[in-house]
Amino acid sequence: MSAVQFEVPAIVPADPQANVADLLAERVKATPSLALFAVPEGDGWRDITAAEFEREVIALAKGLAASGIQPGDKVGFIARTTYHWTLVDFALFYAGAVMVPIYETSSAAQVSWILSDSGAIAVIAESAEHAARIAEIRAEVPLIRDVWVMDEGHLDTLRTTGADVADEEIQRRRGLAVGSDIATLIYTSGSTGRPKGCVLTHSNFVELSRNSAKALHEVVAKPGASTLLFITTAHVFARFISILDIHAGVKTGHQPDTKQLLPALGSFKPTFLLAVPRVFEKVYNSAEQKAEAGGKGKIFRAAAHTAVEHSRLKQEGKKVPLLTTIKFRLFDKLVYGKLRTAMGGNVQYAVSGSAPLGPRLGHFFHSLGVTILEGYGLTETTAPATVNLATKSKIGTVGPVLPGVGVRLADDGEIEVRGINVFKEYWRNPEATAEAFDDGWFKTGDVGAFDEEGFLTITGRKKEILVTAGGKNVAPAALEDPIRANPIVGQVVVVGDQKPFIGALITLDSEMLPTWLANNDLPADMSLADAAKDPKVRAEVQRAIDIANKNVSRAESIRKFAILDSEWTEASGHLTPKMSIKRNVIMSDFADQVEELYAVPVNTTNVSLG
Image (cartoon, rainbow, N blue to C red; front, side, top):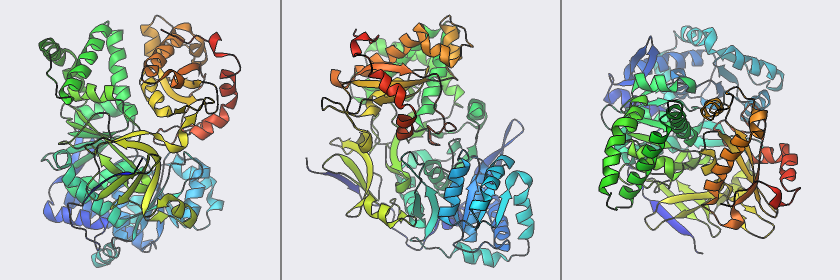
């Protein structure tokens, strides 16, 4: 098959002299009194204008300069997603420094590797707990001169220290970097071995922000646009959006504790959200289980079925039958309206990335009046390479190519990217850099397909394709995603490479499980180990597997599964900070459970053949 290629020219002329700090300076010049952020205060939110934000940025940048941070110096930063994250980010840009973000869930060993590999000379940490992790490895990172802890008032100390630094010095530093210079060094999440540092340039952020703001005009540039960030800003996806928001003048709030997400949405009332599919699954599943507990499970499921059907017919351009329209209007009052209100009442769009979102959820939320714009990108592409647009969107795809970006498919279907968003290199790793490019195109390691209109669909990861003993190629994601949509399933890994059939390891979702157990006349406090053996739980997991199996051929279907008595978490080392599974670690740690699946002939299991 010959390579398929879609390339869209940039719609904003390139500006090789511009840097990220210019985006804030331009915003302040254009709309100094526009509320650019809101921070929690009492039961509500207090606005911070563009001019106020820049004043805080400059005061902090002066403190960094007075403390010996030179232009080009690397500074580590470990903190949750709050207003202070972007404040520190821009203070470092204004001081001419280079931030090295660290996931706040990173282990001491990961922190040590990132600080030593990057050559960072200082670290800003949010809490005493983060500082303790750094103290633990301090002897391994002799270049670190200062550790500033936000919770201990060190940002105020820095502001005081920098009081005598002249404004001109910060303006000088702020203007030093040009487009081709390094803006930040982001380490990959390490789902396949040791994290590599991605050198992202000022142009990567500036050109992608300027072009994306035009392409996503209806989302980010409409008057009153606002968003509540809750996914980690240490990840490129939320980091890019936070920079785009400043460029586009979007009001941004933060809520690092996802358990507080619904109350925060209710009071902040954002117009768009940024989320990973797991968040949409949780919103849907908790609504379903709540309805079930209140004896309205049947109504909810009928409403969900109608929502999906209504959206699908509209997307396909087919006539919606009168009965479906009547049911849709009824359920809009009974069910959809309540969910809209729970999300704050103003959400029109949600940008989703980092993992595939099933079409069912896409259609369901679409009927709620929330258009989920799925996109695709990696750290190496400064986040989005493709994204569904408000004016051009198809549920089940990750959208068309963004302006300034080219995407092509290699002969084996691997997605390759070039353009304004592609990183410069892996830090101090020329071998890995050379290996990552094919004649100027970045090799993503993902496999995909384009439709005739240029909408991309991700079909799997190249390295994750399983080949059964019978020679059948199986993409695990096609099976895993539908199974993970079930309320009681936490995570799932499909296995079967060089084996006679496909199997699966399943973990239960400890948050959703108690409600489901209570709804199914089982003790809500049942342990994970007992639940894993319970016939009703196993039957529910089997039901989820049956649904997934309907999408594939018999040779690709899951014939046997094991429910584990533990969860895979970031702390256990089995998930990355963005909740992707570390397949290689799981395959190694649970090798015995995998072998057990194949120890007995398949016809002795409880696989449903119905």
